[in-house]
Amino acid sequence: MKLMHTKLPEFIAKMKRAAVVNTPEKSIEIRGLENLQHAKMQSLRTGRIENAVEEMAGNSDVVKIELVVIPRVPETMHTVIVKGITESGQTKKAVLEVINILHPTEEAELIGCDDIDDRRPSIGRH
Amino acid sequence: MANLKYKLIRKGVVADKIIPLNIVMVDSADIKACGLQLRDACALLGKQFSGAVGINVFDMDAVTTTSDGIMVDTALIAMAASDGGKINPDFGYLEMAEMPYSEELIELEPHLKQWDISYKGRRLFRGPDPKTKVIPVHNVVMSGRAANNNSATEMMDVVTMEEILLPYLGQREIMTGGEVLLGYTGEVISVGIGMTVKELYGRVFPTRQFGAGDTAHGSGEYAKTLKRDIPCIVADKKVLAKYTVRALEAGMIPGKDIGCSPAVLSLAKAMGLEIAFDNITDKAKTELASIDITFESLKAPCERMTAQMAIDHADEIIPGVVDPTRLKASDISQDCVAQV
Image (cartoon, rainbow over all chains, first blue to last red; front, side, top):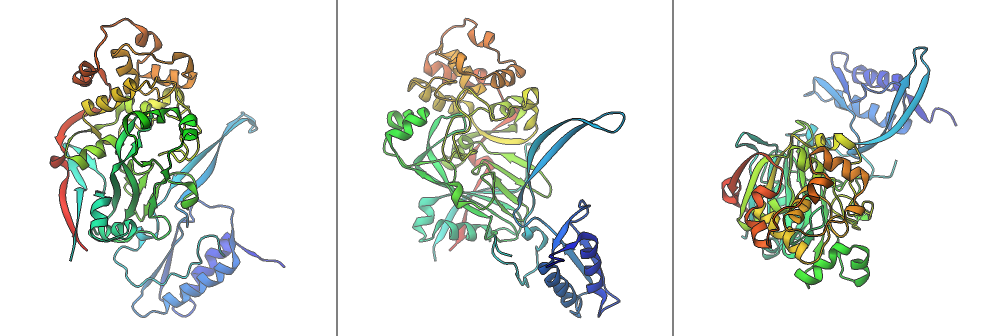
């Protein structure tokens, strides 16, 4: 089986396409992926999100889509790599550390919105 | 229709310090009197506010420990975070674990000898059982912008990134109508919060990772800067002295049985009591020295104070809190009710 995951640029392109496929006058703003350069996106959910974007764009009251990607678990653990680079560009020495980051949960994006269709599986499921 | 009483420290500015979100404190006895479960009560309280709120639930008949191992009557038993009137179903609510009394537990955590001496028969709560929480590392609950961390002793708005430190004794003063200091943490508290005791299901750490005499910071001179500029609400220093002196008089040795925080060390020195210098790690020693608490200064001869003298002179003995304003609990919090 191939294409189990979608390339990041392809994911973004798909969302932009889904927003305008039936509604070329509408726009989409994507936030939360700005810091990613190399990523493979879960394909199954890519299709479901494309579907949601197209569906949202089809709502006559909606003029613009915002697609916001936030961590599902709001504390994320990151490896920090402190690299010492020589004049020739070689990594002379590195220190590995860890840092945990707290992020807002979805309620911060949804203040004042009562019509929320939560299609997420429970944590740990696909 | 029942009314649920609670205390509120309202979001805003007090004495030029930012209170970054609404802070709610509630007695579990009042929750039970309304026939509510703790979680349902937190949901009700969250609905009283349109914005970010941290919610702390107390058992006034239980007992807890401070991060330097001082036992204190009353305890936090649950915490919540709410935003937009909602508590996140996965991450917004957490209960602390009750630690059943046993001789084996006291052997593993010697600061709990205070339990028998001063608080016999009370139920003990500190942090949560990690098996009950979904957030991987910190003992934190989060909903939207609101985060309530380290078992309900730090609250923040994650979007504005403003935070307030709420050491346990200060919260206890609010609940019991005492007096608090509102100030900035400064370098002393920044260093002091790194002093630890070994605890299973502790307020900050789930395992017995750091013992008395050690520090969790391990960042040398940087430790004093880590939480230096954060507003804090702490107990009047006489209250901190009263509980610390009680622990010292129960035979707790700083650096061995209880943590080597600046407050503990300063009171032990003032009373001429033993300090386990040999058990204080180099990492902790470096951090203490960075705020001018050195072994030499602690060993220097001084007039030995009685327990009562040390409590009476707590403001001069205990370092810490920058730009403090002394407030009655009723000056900074208000009594409110939520209709059940």
